[in-house]
Length: 441
Image (cartoon, rainbow, N blue to C red; front, side):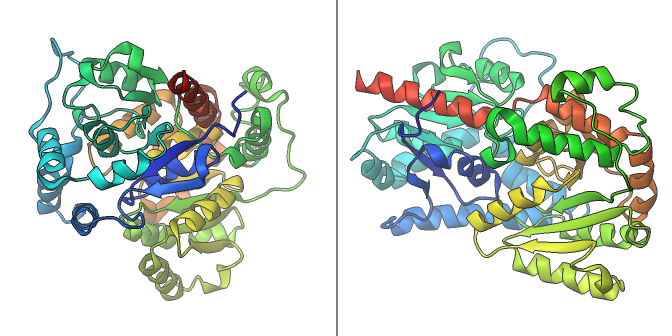
């Protein structure tokens, strides 16, 4: 059992939601239960703040711009995807994959601009384990001589060369890998096996419960709604009993399935939410579905959807069959999202870090991926059977209802629960405790 008195610096960056969402799940292990953001901490040098701001702004602009036909893909590839490009795993390459030009540029920035030096000097006043969800922060820590252990939490099902340091064999960084593919990939980049641990992705504790009790209970209720005709449950009752203890009972009266659509941190795919609104109306009328539209911290997205609801004559369903979820801060947005997921049957989103939430037994409807890492996440979801590619959103009232009737979503829910590691946060907590003990000796 990990003692929560064992603390670490848990460090993220405000770039999309992925890095901060993973860090948020590790809050109970953080020093004073605070997540430190490397791009906005008190006293950050002006140049460091500017560098982080420019990187974040470029990422968000290009992520949204990617949807522009033809040129969007080109711009995204040139400015973003070259840094995070993940090559096909097969055929396997011979030898160790060398560092990319983009990775060398990161190290050049560290040296020439003293990027991150001030931040690491502050952490070195209390050199407890440093746990970060972004590779550049781990590189900063090592480059500027952080005195404590450095743990890097990978946040996708596969990783680019940019997530391993310039000279992996000589690095002190320890890796928390969410999948076996990440373990294999890091080895191909030259990271020693002794530095890689298969932990799983850190999921929120409130959605798991002690001994996974809450996750199992929620999955049982979810299966009852996702498979009202017992298309899946009658065929695979033994499997369900093995993992949940019993087959969920038939509902006394039909209950609507609860669909959640979530945009990414850059606000990408707000238009997809509009298309869903165009297609889902008949399911509201028949009381077969409810819809949560999650805008995160994007006020402009929430307002855009509200206008769409009014234009489509769906206002009567707002607050009943449908709601918009929006918050002013990232932490509040994460809390609201977790509350929403407790009552969610299907999650419709691009294959970001939210792909790992399929481990809770929530089937993922996969929106088109943005970037190389999301392409790999989509492949992984399909491989484990926890995700389904979206069909045309504007006729979703047809295929959503069919997928429920055929038990397709129920099968994906069960596959995700079976195949995906759920206790990543607990496993990473154990690594923090071990690192702290070793550091004291």
